[in-house]
Length: 81
Image (tube, rainbow, N blue to C red; front, side, top):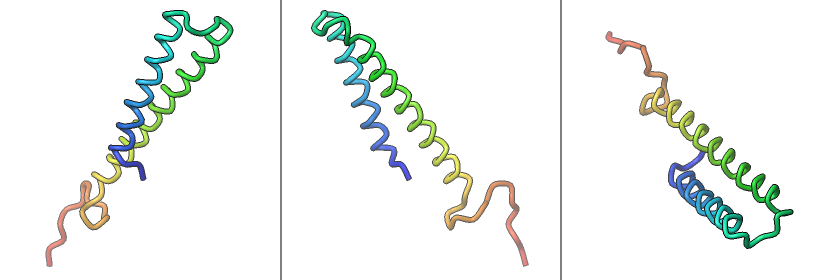
């Protein structure tokens, strides 16, 4: 299971790396032959970040749908005897 804090740290870290790559290209600190490689790295980081967010949201939705003891509680009325 993914931890929300881990996903958040990865998200901020990937944004920091992508910003760094952007400024390297903006100020022409790398050769033009590296531009596509850097773009692919940034795009990969973005899609991994997006995928982790979607997986985390799915895990939280599943955990919320289950009750405190792991039983399905969505839409089931309490049983009275």
